[in-house]
Length: 157
Image 1: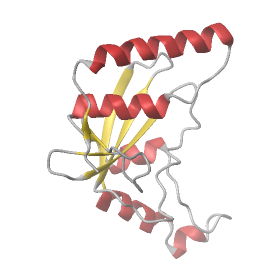
Image 2: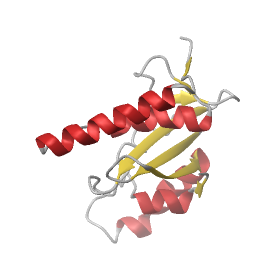
Image 3: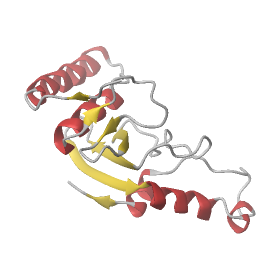
Image 4: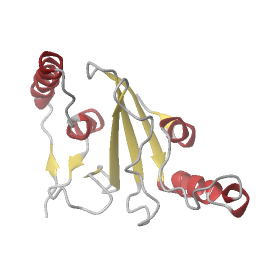
């Protein structure tokens, strides 16, 4: 399937969408699950990525200009558990690198971090080593905290 380049002029549409979501949440006192969609769209616009045409691609959401597979994660302070729980080691890391989009409660983009597959693989090897497993009750750790992602990667915006 062909990947989709998100037009730069969608940044205004995305800004309007974020405003509507925030207003909706405030007015109705409910939380929505839009942070992932917003993160994917904004990552594509900010980083010049092409969105994967089929959202069922295993393990990646977009491709870059070098055709590298990109996993996009997003979190929103005030709503998040502090974990990037969708980065799973369980099924293997099926992307070349991951980006983490960090927003405030109003969906203002605060930071973007990037971590290569090798960095994330090393993280999971280290935390799942026999020595580390002895220190906790859960045998295999398959997700990571936001602070661990930041430590593995680097801030790019």
